[in-house]
Length: 559
Image (tube, rainbow, N blue to C red):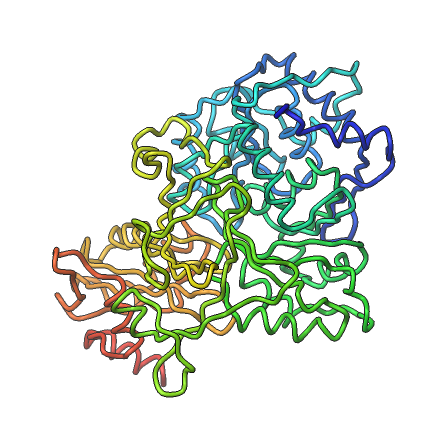
């Protein structure tokens, strides 16, 4: 296998020089159209300028960016040169800048990048993280044309990029992806979904997430397909932009977290005919527990406008396998199982039910492994038994960049232990949850233990006497709930405000509910640890022991 990542870009730059490689859309509509020939030339120019700044093969280039031509040139220019690019999340207005800086300072120090790229809006904050060279994406876009620089013939086992997972804990782990692993993924996953150079990708996904980077950027670049990138905040403000672009583009694909299906169904304001969306090839649910109701709402909203009946599908992905591990068939409708919720929760097994006489739960398939991937459940558990999902195959990464301890924990004897729970049934795989008790709020992974640690630092909270968990809501995402014990020296109202402010500053969300419970009432496991699942159940059953002071605050607030 030769390093053919840029082969289609070079070919398209000659055969279809004015064809769209990337098109950027923002609050005011289309901002830029970047042709194949433009991208081929400017990537070469960027690589040459990087070289003159001292960047060499194997050097790391960090890119703090959200939406710009410069971020694309920086990433691909580094690869063209043989350097190792990595996208990082820039700070947002909803984040506590001190917390963001503290977390990313450690990453920058560990990685020791040769060059750091930043969009102008956050350059001041990014510059405080590093003592090395800092270049603005605007500067990259304005660099003059240079003599063409041939692409470095990178070894297939050379690192192509680092992928930093989303979430607070995930940011501490940079997955190393080689060209061999990347090309294996793109070839296998692309073939699975029938993806070729006639495809058009429409995406609002942040490029520093694996779904936005691999599926919506690197896959089309490798295949010679076109991409329409919508600024994330523009999409949140006007989700109909995405539907309009899907309708306009033939052979269109998009990848979405679960909440987005519901969001698009309810909030898209766009004029459509009865055949507007007939060109949509696939709208793939990925990165969150996939909920049947939300996908059905999307289908009910858009099938009358031509959305093909099998367009909505599901992918199970992980950055440690570059991206896709399984994919449902685009030629058939999704399979969903109605299972006995009690058997699932207490016995880790699947018992099918019609849902009439007992409490049931609907679980949607995530499909079958892509070519080359081998997946097992636990220690080769039988069909219908829930255990950890474990995978190996040609796209499996080697581990985490300069993080041997975590690499040894997750990569064992050639297998990656995902930390996800699931089962196999009738040849298909299903995911039931996460071992690490992730709370997934609107596509963002919130680690419960990080929230608990943060809340424990708030004045008035008894350290270590906190539990955080997620509760599903009607919008297709989860809401964060905290139950805490208090020292008693801060009023309940001020304590809740302090917790909410602290969490919002660090995670950009506010808990949907923060309750103060009676002293020593949080349920523990037999090993003495506070049980998130048991306390979540008590909360949902309304049996959790709320403190008298919290009950009093509730009565006052209800007046």
